[in-house]
Image (cartoon, rainbow, N blue to C red):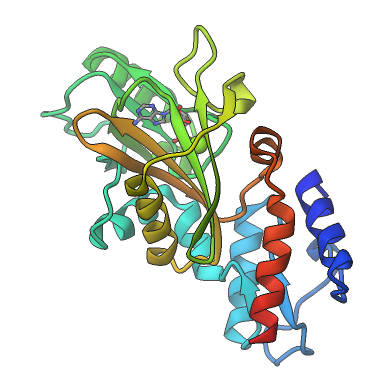
Length: 268
Ligand SMILES: Nc1ncnc2c1ncn2[C@@H]1O[C@H](COP(=O)(O)OP(=O)(O)O)[C@@H](O)[C@H]1O
Ligand SMILES: [Mg+2]
């Protein structure tokens, strides 16, 4: 368990909620019959693949999970998430999907960011300043498996600074800005990015709340980039977000808020 799961567990116990902790790696789940009544299941796996799958199976059998299985899968796939959000009228980072490593990429304005459709902590998120650099990056990808040959290409927005807006239900509970560390342009805290609390304007919060709704999520960490020309744009939505850094930066007890949200749902 990460610190996040421990914190949520403590808060649920404090609220006198009966909690059953299950490590899905230690169980086998029946697919062909309805299981026992599990109450509400908070899905907090590190593996989004396992998380989405198990939540979907539970949902099919009528068990409520937070987040829902399909919502976890749709959010984890950056290409699907961006398409759903754009279709819903939400401002997103303009993105193209490249299915091969030798695409026709006329009309791309450099610099561009190239990234895997699944990933976190800034892993394999790269910058190409011209055709040659993009070709080289794609050539490296061609050595990988079918999934790692697929990538997303985006214009470089702002200066790599990103904004994390944490939404529970239809409310923003906390937000912070992350600035890249000197010498990098990726603001992931895992890469030395510096986080601090920030209050954003209503537009940013409205965009984040709409994104959570559009993806059918109960709660999420919505990451926005900002450009002077286009304002706040959704870059990615985290359906199983970590929040230790956000709690430290803002002093807001996110774990408590997630626990309270669950309790409210259970009482409905
Ligand atoms: N299109 C972009 N323009 C500018 N910076 C970007 C862009 N895409 C990603 N970044 C920077 O790289 C970081 C990691 O990229 P991101 O898409 O969030 O992937 P991950 O899921 O690995 O965090 C972002 O937090 C941001 O600082
Ligand atoms: Mg990110």
